[in-house]
Length: 262
Ligand SMILES: NC(=O)c1ccc[n+]([C@@H]2O[C@H](COP(=O)([O-])OP(=O)(O)OC[C@H]3O[C@@H](n4cnc5c(N)ncnc54)[C@H](O)[C@@H]3O)[C@@H](O)[C@H]2O)c1
Image (cartoon, rainbow, N blue to C red):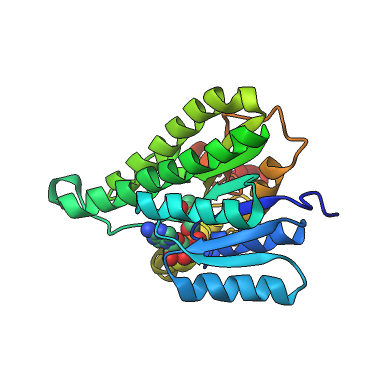
């Protein structure tokens, strides 16, 4: 099925992990995907892999924190494609864990710059174009850290909650133009970003997840595809947790399941 045939999609942080899987799956559905990343080499590699499969992709080095660079990028997409149908604000970092009292200004600001400012710059430019065509699908990558913010990651939690706020306001402002705006809150997903934590605690995290596995980037890409469909027109302003039910579990559940599922 090529449900996105003829559409133009922009993915930020598309050079690795979740963004790579999203780029691949959008392209498989027929979209022309602009794989953007601050790491030009990775963006190029992903776009080449997509093209080799006979699907459509272009690579672009884009640092989402550079407002002028983001404007220039969307102007180039305009020139080459004339439209933007799908934006996935995915670029991100985990940052270094630190107690609030020790958190450095630079760490805090960098986190906001990439996740909040970067998503805003891209959304603003994409929305202008989507309004012109009276159509759009925007997906912002939030996190389980916006279900409950993690100790040691106040900066990460704060930006992922901010993305939910951005999603809700944008959904209301853009609904009149048939543009939907949604967020995804992935649980622990295997990628470069979680290498450290998985090296420490993979078995424990997998065991604590009712579906008994660590999520894959493809699991998140499937949720993106759902929001990106043309007929998902009534789904807007919402956030979808994709975590194998990890965040639903509490100690009482474990007691009951241990007692009943022998
Ligand atoms: N992996 C997880 O468990 C998980 C869970 C919840 C949310 N997320 C979110 O998913 C998104 C993707 O993460 P991932 O796990 O695929 O990590 P990843 O490190 O594999 O990919 C992140 C990509 O973003 C790019 N990037 C970083 N800064 C950038 C910038 N300034 N401009 C453009 N690109 C930039 C990186 O080069 C990299 O290719 C992030 O927003 C992350 O916060 C990940």
